[in-house]
Image 1 (tube, rainbow, N blue to C red):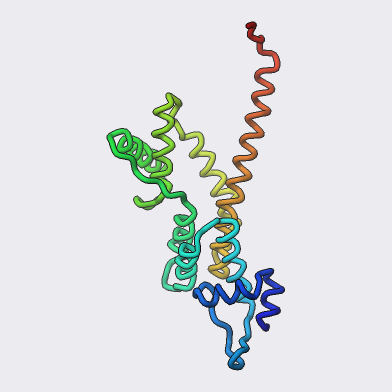
Image 2 (tube, helix red, strand yellow):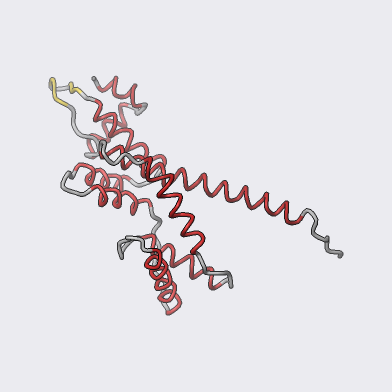
Length: 212
């Protein structure tokens, strides 16, 4: 297909496609003439992945380039490829000075170990979990996150992971991971807030009213 058709079918402007080509995000097409090239379905898949990473994942171009390089590296195992995408989606958390941070990070690592999860020592989510534990402790709230962890494990293994195509194009697996992580995460947070409102209404309906 010509670039104009690629633009129409993908919904990506021609100028943007040319930018992706210049930046190496999109493979070059088959050159037919000095100013004409042909593109195929692999370019459509790549554009779809780029849009998912950019619009849903909100990732910068540098991070997208890193993920796409991993997609194109056939020697990289699929688990490591998905990890590259997953880590890019994780917010940056700076370890805090002091013993409190050390204890929180140790608690996060201990929970992961107790659950038997196969998580790399340098996984960004370990620091993210440590930060949450630290804030919970500082505010005097419970730091027992096992119920949340067990729910997360069930949601991932029973609902999310089965939707990731592990035997198809590598782009499709990464795209599914990004969509799952971001969109299901947002949906879960919305459902949790709705459940909180409903539970609050039920719990306070017959509660005695305070008198001023």
